[in-house]
Image (cartoon, rainbow over all chains, first blue to last red; front, side, top):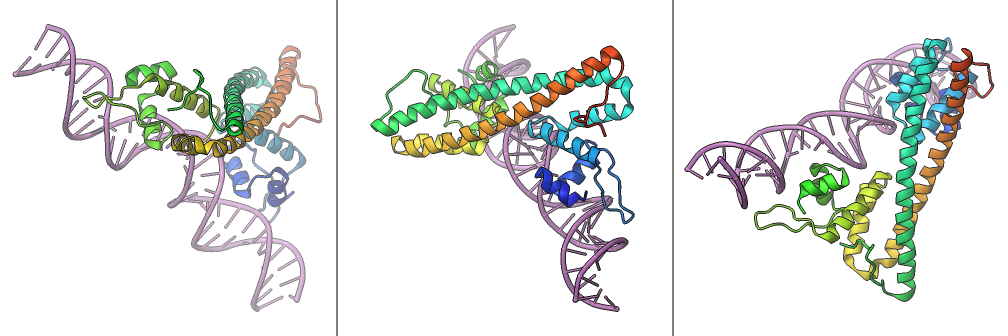
Length: 130
Length: 130
DNA sequence: ATACTCCATGGAGTCAACTCCAGGTCAAGA
DNA sequence: TCTTGACCTGGAGTTGACTCCATGGAGTAT
């Protein structure tokens, strides 16, 4: 599969794919005789995995380490497990922050809806207008 | 309240607080006769609000607009509502990405746990090892 | 042979959001 | 009065993650 097809399949640019490979979160992709990247099915799985984790905000640096361990073979299962657990904790913290912000937004939205309907905002000690 | 106290209260640096003010996501903070910032209780509410939304990844730019509208008065309720709704959509999308990544991590973690126990990883078509 | 399109590389540039720093003011304590 | 510590400002520097660009090779259609 060409880089163009892969970039379209996953909705990221070709530049990003090349950057990921250089950065080390994708393995060295096979080349055609002419030198063009030729993504194999296993590569696509890994690309999808990385794209998903990146979209959730996992740092490239951690993913580099993860690929490195994976390529070192089965002996690194415990380290990989530790790394994934740590990242899971990070995602969990991120989820909490999102939920907190979501609650705030929902509260504000409901207040503004009210205000738009009645034309004024009744005072509330939880308000934070400067 | 001094900038030091505020920074400790919310776990952000003094530099960040000054940056937020300059960037326009905090209102102009009152000063002591000597020129030092003196955060009032309403300021603290707003700071908390901004810190919470920033932690969830809401862009500074949107928050600037939000503060601007707020300071323009009650006539901007509809715009503020629209802005908050838009940001709510963003958080929702972010939540979905997080959930997707979380599922992947959990799956991987369970597989690695198994592997660490048995000493090997049985093959699985959903695997994405490069 | 020419043109066109896709792809490669190395390196520079961009962007958001801080973070750090130099040089200076101010108030309180020894 | 001198020192110390917290604070000020404007501006430069950093970080992470891309994104863009100039230049050049390959493969295909005319």
